Image (cartoon, rainbow, N blue to C red; front, side, top):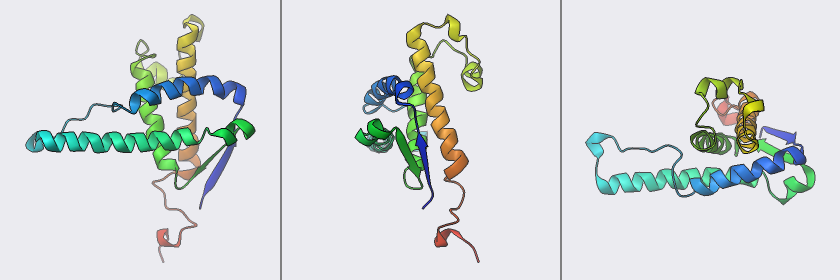
Amino acid sequence: MRQVEVRLNLDAVAPLLDIIKAAVDHLRAALAVDQQVPAPEADAELAAHWQDELLRTQSDDLGVLLALFDREFFRTGLVVFNDENSEPILRACTAVRLRLRATGLHALADDCLETGEVPLGRMPEAQRRVFASYVFLATLQELILQHLDPSEPNPDDPAGTEE
């Protein structure tokens, strides 16, 4: 199993986790992106079931993300990404980033957020912390994609190799 261990600075990350956890609390009851059942299948019962399933999956993914920051993390500063948790963490980071974008960063243009070219000096402190959380989650996603890209076959997995 592929695995990546990353040691994070607790003093830098701990304040960001408060913002991330607040977003996660909201996302446990609401999808990051509203989904509509396609028109041909627009049955109320099906739509409710589909929404419930999406919300359950999102909640499970958020749980995997938060599990990175457990008691052991606060003791060592270490987070571990592997083949099992990489996809749920990628999805959870996306959901939280969308929530942060919609709430604390809505005044910023998408291109500014994606390039990181934001007027930090003119931002209120609270918004700077939200932006730092947004960038932190993007960095986690980049690490996972760089080292554990779920779309690439695992060379250590015999089922994933061709002969």
